[in-house]
Length: 114
Image 1 (cartoon, one colour):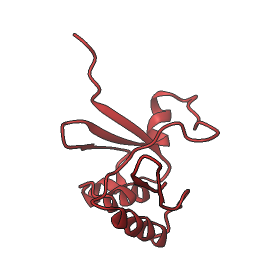
Image 2 (cartoon, helix red, strand yellow):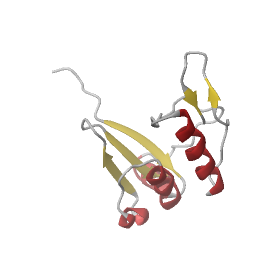
Image 3 (cartoon, rainbow, N blue to C red):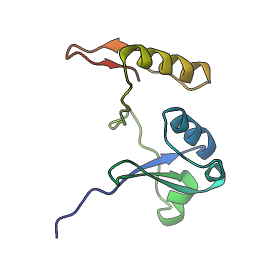
Image 4 (cartoon, rainbow, N blue to C red):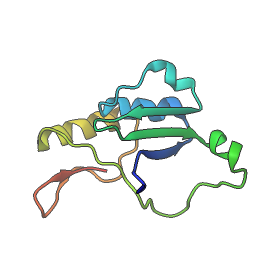
């Protein structure tokens, strides 16, 4: 049997803050999950997005340390329009989340923000 991608995992420092960010992007995560060390969200199509605290990862891999340098992975969320990208980016930054790159129009015709 071939392997099938079923889970994308994220290691988080602050579960409640991280889940709050993804709720603002439209993920349905119960508020009770904020205090959990491991949370899984089933996405459309069945893929799961998992969140683990640093402590959870270190419980089975005591030598784990966060990667250094620039991120080498990302998650992309689609918006209904370029204006929605700008609006959502502004809301996230206003809520205290760090923006890395303000919205811009990519040469291939899509609007992005990081």
